[in-house]
Image: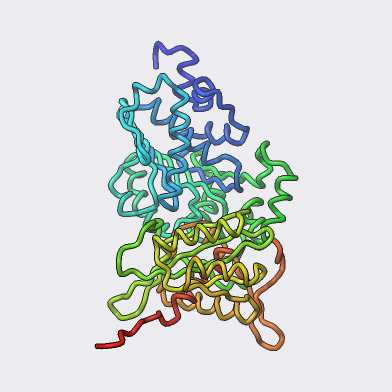
Length: 441
């Protein structure tokens, strides 16, 4: 690098200098440490929520590609929707550097290509698609939520051997299992013996100067103790007394599922609605029932969303519009706490709707039916972390008389709206469909 000014030399060798000089972005100390360790062969970043690590590695990826020729930087996320987050961050960053405009020859939602023949790709964790590349730098974002982590590693490991590249694995914890837990343990044990390996513990979320203890206390009021400790304290927690273990859920997750906006003729859709009460959100799940070759039915999630702090009248109006696009064969809605009037308004919008009053026996029946379709692998759900976490968070205990009871601690803080909306939709789809017989043959 003869003939380079000291500043230019630093920009090419130090991402912190390049980012500061070109964008004005000033990293926090832990972010700067990650960037300064860019030459390491393996980095495993164990973090808590909302501290900016995805932004940090997105900025590092932009620096790698913009300053060094012939690099292929690959960012892998749990789903297609999540893979758009780092790419949106990189787009926003590059837009602040006008002098790079003439160096970018292609830019879209999954790829950025530079004139120096370097590229950035952001993709979902589809092993078949990943095999087509030979990356020099690989980032696995939210790796604890990868469903097919073994095939993913089989796809990317040869790349790293061939290119002598770097691997960075980032995630909040999701139990003591899977790729992220294994690599975190490996890096923790190896870092004292291998100078090219490092494990980071960036917990709790108050490590970020933007998050205060008061902020965490407010979040704590909205979450179960399990959720809070895992998400914001970064604890690796074991599954104990979990009604839907993660190993039961993951075989039914299809990362390729996207929302269906309009139905084709002949399709059957079933709605489950858990209406908001107090601090909750209204959750809506729409299932499609598909007949399989063996004669059984598969239930596929086609829409999933929540509404927070929305008037019930507006919600009914939106459900009515949705019913016009995806005709509802049967709808079940939680009537508890919202009253019969809301359900009556719902039946005017969706004539096949009916209310369900939640009680301990009702919840046991709904959860049991949902567990059955999971066990039989007759359900497909999207790789949505919020949905999966709520399903996985249902805990139970056995009473002295031997009866199953769902634990009710943190009752005012539990976010289980998606869980019960899904259970209601499965219940609706499990009942015999309405068949109108002709009067005359």
